[in-house]
Amino acid sequence: MNYDDLKKALSKLPLGEVKYFDSIGSTNTEALAWATTDTKDLSLVIADEQTAGRGRLDRKWFTPPGTALAFSLIVHPTAEESSYLTRIVGLAALAIVDALQARSLIAQIKWPNDVLLNGRKVAGILVESVWSGEEVDYVVIGIGINVLKGAVPPADLLQFPATSLEESLGPAMEREEILRDILAGIIALRPHLGTDSFIASWEKVLAFRGEQVQIEEANGSFTVGKLLGLEPDGSLRLSDEQSNSITVRFGDVHLRPHR
Ligand code: ATP
Ligand code: BTN
Image 1 (tube, rainbow, N blue to C red):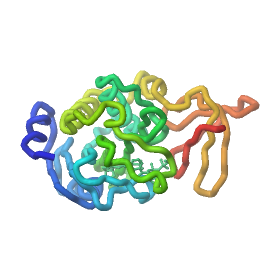
Image 2 (image 1 turned 180 degrees about the vertical axis):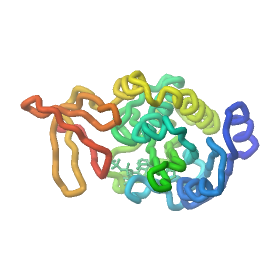
Image 3 (image 1 turned 60 degrees about the vertical axis):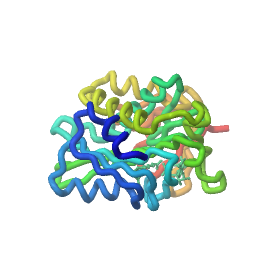
Image 4 (image 1 turned 60 degrees about the horizontal axis):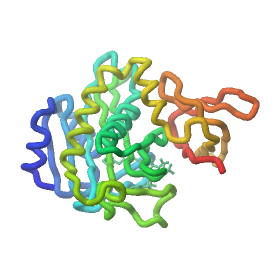
């Protein structure tokens, strides 16, 4: 990635500071450390390659050089935004879906933190926050996107099938422009974080909506139900065969279609 092209692409956005790395362990780890030093709101860490990219619960996220987008946006939430922290993963996911839609791609959100294209994972989101007592000091929104085919890990390393934008769009894509559109989307959606229409937009693009899904928890337990939508806090709403409502909260849960 060329730093001058990156700066040019981002020049019209109201970002804080931007740090670019050819290679880094994890942009989220860097952003978490940076955010403690009075960093401005909307500061950005971006890397061409990650050698220790992280998914949820320290699962690995692969970011080979020259193939992907890997970045972390530091947000200093307002008092109002602090009461909607569990919606921030939805904010990022919606901004990704919108940026892909602008390229005529219909993407869906595999709750809670993945974006699918043609039923395969094309992007993942890792939101981490740092608290001081009861207050959230800052939130780091980490986003990884498989842009070129080379970003997609070998199938035997995956729990869920993956794809890249290249598989749908061909190789002629500017990573910087996709990045710009996602950041612009996050910035534009941010004032709507606390609204009902925000939840409605998030629900509308959920993968498997109206279908039978299964939720596997870390303890090995399975819940099967029809995916109905979201609770106001972004938890997932299912109904079981007796039409009892089930709420699935954020945590170490894996969502799959039920076959
Ligand atoms: P799933 O629902 O796929 O089981 P998860 O949402 O619980 O996954 P996450 O922590 O969100 O898991 O994502 C990490 C997982 O994503 C890794 O365990 C790996 O299987 C997969 N993965 C890693 N790198 C990539 C990538 N570049 N593209 C797609 N998938 C990836
Ligand atoms: C997931 O699907 O579990 C989330 C993957 C998030 C990956 C991104 S890449 C940029 C940022 N830095 C990281 O180490 N992780 C996130």
